[in-house]
Image (tube, rainbow, N blue to C red):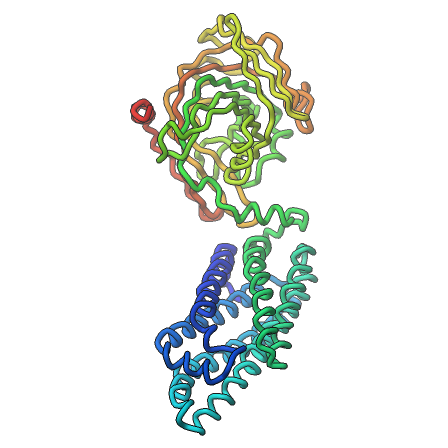
Length: 504
């Protein structure tokens, strides 16, 4: 329909529509309620007179609410298939007609009705005119205008249902939302004040979350990059709505192991979203299983004493983002702290699972026992045999080259197919005082007998060990993939180490 709407503007419009309606609803609840049905008409007219300025301002908040709804319908119409565009234009026209009725009624409430209310007790003509308008408003605005919005929504919902990959759950939800909203029009036509209040509460309780689900789950995607309906599940959409990495985080790695696997790129490529590229070394992709004891993890602005200590295991792939910046992409994470697992899964791209992890120090050894269905790890590392020399299994020519490729990575990338956005989290950390360590009896189920990897397509390259590393994660940076021009981070590792020591 129009080129104005992009996935990002649709999503922003959804939020704007919700926020403007919340302001208008707040004005209706705290100000307008005293002057609207049900209730004695004379008492309500007196309320309008006594609160004229607040009354007028409260009604003014509903003017942009109607505008954002029409714009949202236009964005919705822009997403249906082209062969249905005539019907989509009709739906937007009906919504605009409803808005024009609403705007006219609201201007009357702002400019004319308060004067009639002020003369209600002394002027019979004013009292009759005010009573007539009070009744007409219910029919014209809540009844007719809202009914036009509902008809427009029914048309668009039917068109969307017939459009490729519109999720069925969202179509059913839309039908329910607008059926309840149409019930509000019925209440207005029969002039039942109590019925109007109940129907209004139900309608808006469903409408506001529906707008966001539409804005994130369907409207926010570009038509040319349409996703399968299975990727637009309710859970996927809700997870996309929850802000990721909203706070800078800080921790200290007590012990850290990097178990590095060389993998056939053909096996790993399907697991990495298309905007992100594998970074290869000698034709192989690399995945590192990072095993670490996280000491005092907390938001960066909180004191160390409020942090949480736990064990964590992550599976991260060495990748490049559009623009060439190197970093990592997380396939899976395990943590043995329930709160960190739940919060981490909702607020990060780490894909956390809650799993028991036991780290045991012995006589020159460090044993790891991860009990996770399909991803168990049982390994014992010989810390007494640390060395700065790569094992024969490594494909790297030197210790320094391996460290540069596998460790010097300061960005985490994630891609949201619902919004077509590449997300980046940059880190600052202390220097890794790195050693190679042998694994005496390692068994990595997810890497050697899992759903994607096995001993034929995956080979253990090397295992690194380091201690006492301060880490700082910055907040998320979102960029549209098409316009992405990523910057390389300016990492000040020495400064971070001094800051972390100072915080201790």
